[in-house]
Length: 324
Image 1 (cartoon, rainbow, N blue to C red):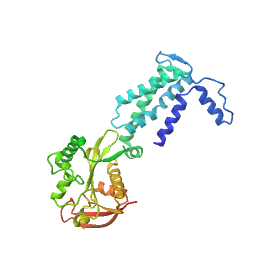
Image 2: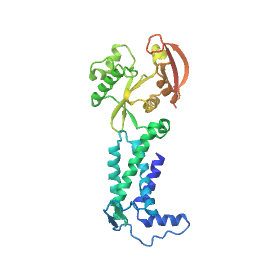
Image 3: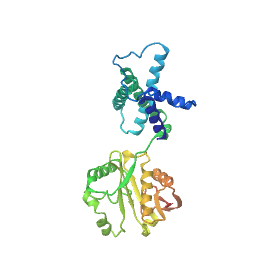
Image 4: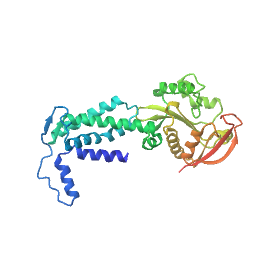
């Protein structure tokens, strides 16, 4: 994100200010006094509506051509990185709209509206998009270093999320996933029945718990469900289930959501007065869950036989996480 903001700042200076601003800044950097010569900030510039005039053979034209493309490559790269579902069509459209707006602004600050700049800048955005796609395909490990995770939030289940939660259930069943932390979602027939958490807990003689939907802020999509059982734990939970159970819908996995979902829930545990919480996982059947626990500071206490058969490997690992 720091690179993105540095790039945006540089683009503002290079593309959105009159020429005398950047020239005066260069003078300051070289130890000279600020001297803009009284030039106005807003002044009508020139216009070129003739395409391909820049495509000439002299050295300066080639430099200008390459510079106009390269200057907007980072924009296409960062847009593809931050905007999920970013396609080549959207790359071309956003490139055209953004660069068109830049050229209109430049016309008002004494620079020029140049159709060639729009063509070349849009091509630069598209090249940035292609660079991200190639990086993801041929160097996925390197691409993950650039990946910025969406902002998530824990939300109390309401009728607003009825369709999403039932679609969540259908997807979990389709992929044959375990419903850990879903507070009985697999067993209910309707969303209204699932929302009656306290009623079902009382019928089964369980202590009251809290369940949250993990919602992605960018599009309001439910990507996970997590359940917190406050202390003191029952004998069964203390041995096998722990304080927290959670799951991420299959099509949203491998994006770091489980780690962030657990981190957010640990904040809720801290507010509830917990000093440490127990989180368990299948010894071999769920390595992703184990990584999530370790990433949040989990410390292995021991490994026990899965007598109730809640996992797949026959062994349960018990981790304690200190609440900071």
